[in-house]
Image 1 (cartoon, rainbow, N blue to C red):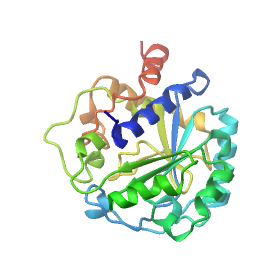
Image 2 (image 1 turned 120 degrees about the vertical axis):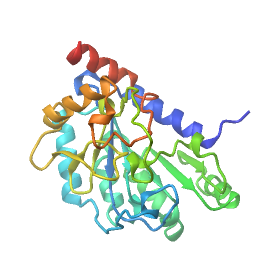
Image 3 (image 1 turned 135 degrees about the vertical axis):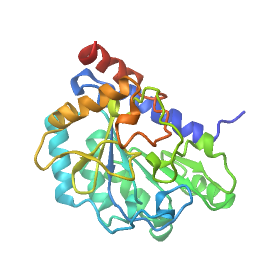
Length: 277
């Protein structure tokens, strides 16, 4: 039986993160970079369908260069995901930003709409250094098949999110509680802050990609190094609470329904051994 696209993408992401684990980077294996806080769609599984603001804030070339500098300084060996809370290709400088991050073979997640307006964009992105393109297809089987046919020869995965698809299999969460609350905080370990961080369009570093309510900032690359942020006192405190299953004591986590213990075991074990035993 052929794997669903949701499972295919999850395995792709898991493999990327496992391969990227490095002691040199203190377990930081994936960095999600937000190119734009703007989106051209409103989906029912997204907080934009409730009250999340749709603002035309975009990563600048200067800040992309700063991120590059900070990653080189950190000797970052992990993977980069270009996605976040908006549609990254609405950033008019997206190709140039990709070029600045090409050393880390980034992959980009898009709803595909900007690709329909510019037939040269995919080629430009891969020429700039994009390693993989993930297209979320929401509209039709016809378009789903069209993406694979049109971009045959490029490294792409198309996630089929059409109609009454399986939300559980697609792993859509409540976005840290931004969509709906849960009755009781989870008590399971969450590996996310052990292997991943988020860099917003303004070069500020956020605690977690699932936090749509607070967008809690743990640092600013304009003022701090990646190492100082990643191993900062606040992050270490949050990790300790998550290690003890105390999500209820972290405002960004207490209403989150993400299990968080499927990907990132290597980084989690590393922190336990090096910092918490």
